[in-house]
Amino acid sequence: MFDKKENFDFPDNASFVTRMNVRINDVNYANHLDYSALLEMVGNARSQFFRHYGCTEIDIEGVGGIVKKIYVDYLDEASFNDELEFKVFVSDIKGVKANLLFLITNLKKAKEVARVAMNFVFFDAKKGKLCSAPEKFIHMANSHQELIELRN
Image (cartoon, rainbow, N blue to C red; front, side, top):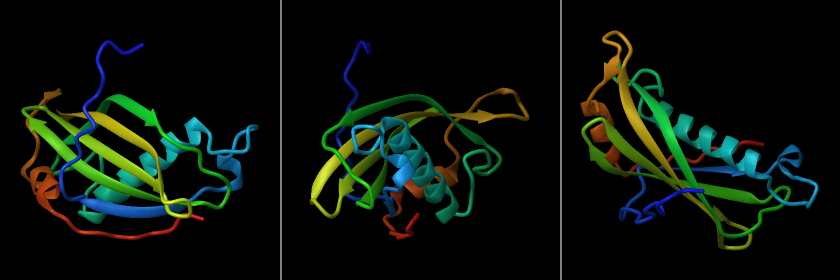
């Protein structure tokens, strides 16, 4: 159990938006989106976010991002073939830390499926230590561009 509730105060504008369909193998025995599949989709959205800005999670101007904690607030079910929209926000860039926030909406039902907060730290592998957020990441946080891709 977590000792504190994660802050889900979303900035005004998303830095990135993508869409994915719930696949049959994403659905559990209760006939709705499985929690592990949701986290896989969040990881996919995170990777698309970095790729959109010309970098990867392990190379943002030579610095890597490491997921330290993930908080998930499940709000509604999603079913096979529902189209989900993932809005990615960046918040609270402070020193070696930042938050990636995900607002996940079921477009068919027009309902929020989940809110996810991912605490991130930056690591310089060459120096073997934590480091400040790269300038490119700060630029990514302040950008409000959208990219829509479907994962079938």
